Image 1 (cartoon, rainbow, N blue to C red):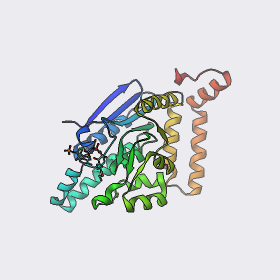
Image 2: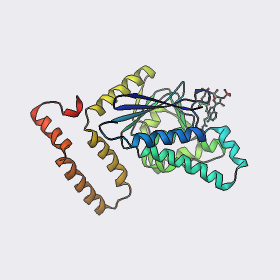
Image 3: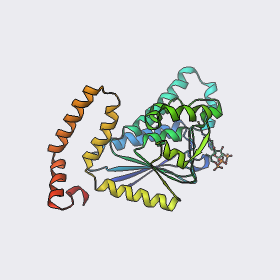
Image 4: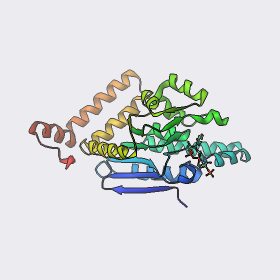
Length: 261
Ligand code: COA
């Protein structure tokens, strides 16, 4: 039985966690399905796929790793535990590296691994009553695999304060620390805002949006001189590309660019 639902609306895909009975907690099966879904989406070109919405069925976006599944880890070997953790990393990396922009639609709660998923999205919109938390330490475990994705978003200061306590916090604090980008009043407003953002993506150059996203990730590991060379090369390529020429020409001609039709 699958714990994931996929929907498609032209150039926009929806990847929907679908285990509402356990608040969309992910076990090995769902982790594998999420990874496969994002790897398949990552093979699509910029015209075919211009955005992905990551969402969860029911009252809660994602309650993190499935506690039943994690408890069974005690009976597994160290090597099996490491394989499980590597699979979780591969899933988060697949979302993080998805070339198309990813919007997380968050309601109810995002806890533990659910925070990891939020951190791998480009834009996170949440309802004001959503509860957030790196709750792992409350369960006697640690937010290990999610941390390489979370730290670039919230920084060491917030990570240390929130990791050690495992405390739960509200959407406004999640927005202040950079994990969430926008807070809306309810799920109706959430759907409206997600649609607005898809409209924004529709009017952004398909390869430009992808290149801009990739650039941010690439800069993480470059030294200043490498970053200088890389960014110079990147903008020169994009400016002279058919898309760059179309976008600049459309602005000067006072007409919409061909990709926004
Ligand atoms: N893993 C497995 N099952 C989970 C789960 C998880 N992470 N989170 C919730 N569930 C299950 C509950 O055990 C419960 O099962 P039951 O109906 O068989 O009793 C069901 O989902 C509903 O949970 P409940 O707590 O009654 O729902 P709620 O809507 O009142 O609260 C949460 C939702 C997410 C706020 C709450 O379930 C929660 O805090 N979960 C713990 C999440 C967590 O700490 N995750 C970090 C893991 S590292």
